[in-house]
Image (cartoon, rainbow, N blue to C red; front, side, top):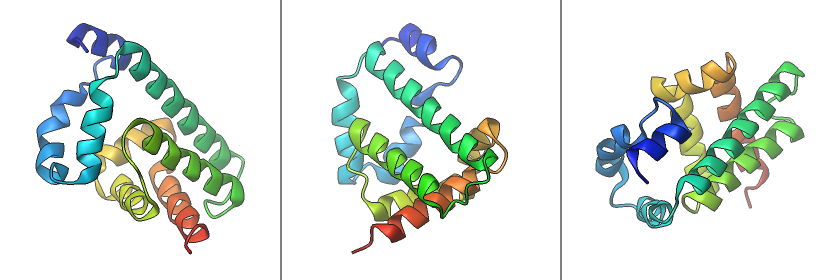
Amino acid sequence: MSKEAMFEVFGDFDPSKYEEEAKQRWGQTAEYKQSKRKTARYGKKEWQQIKEEGEALHQDLARAMEDGVKPTGRRAMDLAERHRQHITRWFYDCGYPIHRGLGDGYVSDERFTQFYERVRPGLAAYLRQAIHANADRNAS
């Protein structure tokens, strides 16, 4: 997708800015390779849909927090599962161990934390807890 189209979808956020870091950290993994294959065929329409679905999910998570739903509650775990399925649908097969790692990254990497904190203060930690609870719920 062109830089202009990316700007139309993401505004001043430039995902390509993190491409080299991602390649260095995860480039040898099956998930990274699968994500590169899937996203290579996406155009503006698909990226817009990904963004809209993600924003809706984040707002639903924020509403759950505001409603006093515990991150270990069914509603929060269902939202965490929706988050996992969103990643699987658009990027790579996101099993529960990988999803746990992502949740941990949301609180250990300040860039992720800041992203979620802009949606609602405390959201990064809330989502991490919901992800872990959901993974526990689905452990066999």
